[in-house]
Image (cartoon, rainbow, N blue to C red; front, side):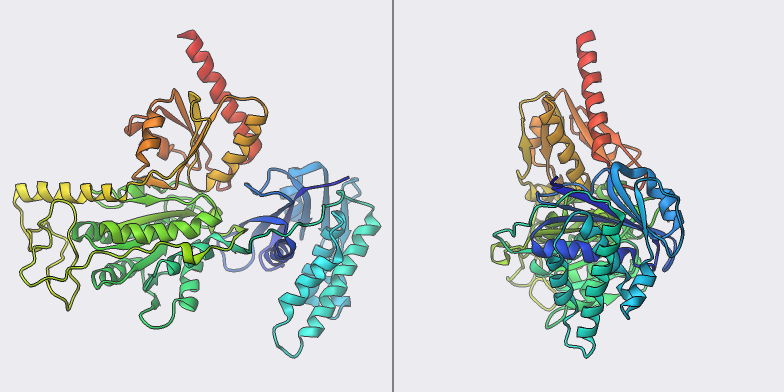
Length: 571
């Protein structure tokens, strides 16, 4: 029997190797050509607490992390008790018999992870014991894992070969243990390496690389989950001439420093999460008023306040639109998968340069920690934009034009004042009513420079359509595909550009009887925004801190369509 797709969850205590084991399986599978997608969730303390990581391996492209578990690897009893009910009826549980014991239930078998690892001479090889057992369950060739092990631990160190040999022993011990159990999930077909080069990265890494590809000069950030990895990446990689990465002492220092770098002519960015983003509101208002390019990445997490620091949510959209007081509405871009994180960062920096102002890139925990193998981006095809810089003489009226004017840079011609007060054409403060009206129109009209008709659509003639946003795209798309197979009448729309929306897409949505919006928040934030634009939109909401499950979405979308049809019939 073939098994073309399987989902395994590693669950236990932080520090037990849960994340490491998952990463090893994902990397080994991706290396030989399987499609891979991971999802992690963990507590907010530095070490310890319940942690789990899920890996989905498939012979076909993957859209979601999976609904049910084919394998649960339980490192402790609490993990078994917590996750046991999510194992499919044909699934298998591998438990750490060195930590706890279970009575035979016909679906579980134990392996003493640490004891078997110790027998190899390397206690750290326990993760390879687990991966070896998993490989046996799906009949994955030992050579796949051995090659990964060789590449991973050939680092030019004296004990590399010793580690490689102990890991190989651990793989074989795991296989032997699983073989003795008698369990099998079938045979995973051989991997077919894609014709194009691929990389296995997570959303934070892809976003960081995209920003660097767009010419980022300056990154200043303050550590906050789940955005800290972007700061660490920049500190390690944004180096060289005219490059600067720095850990600030607070979010206030971050945003004000980034605005200062933008004023000086640099492409500047910071990254934060919900609590830090709210602290940046005044700085973003300053950048909006003074018309200074910069990018703020908000990796959304559960809120409000400290909320759920290491769980996923899509509840910052309205705040991203209006982060400060007064009349301001910022451009917002929200990627839907790891590959889009790369291109969303490029777009955000380009937009900031194009309209000379702050841009918000809305990521989320679900994307930040999710690893996925994606086509290696072709940097030669990347379009990089730069702002219009003033090159004339002195006496320049920076804020005279009705929409956009070239930006003077410090030390160059056309110097000007850039403060947070309403200003006259030179940039000096003024309280004149007519001037405030003129400048308000200028700031809002500039957003029209970012209008792009970039969106996806299928079955666009249907009266009821599905419109996900952000990281909900994958589960929604998988649900949509299955609904199509079931013969449901439903259309599909999607875009990364949340503000401004693609105008053609918006006009099409206005003609629909119903637009269903799956989103991870309580308020139904994106659908409320769409209704303000004249779209009859309704949300399917979830606020558990976890992504949507595809089977739940299928049921809830079907119910919405049925209710809508019945309502039409009564009318």
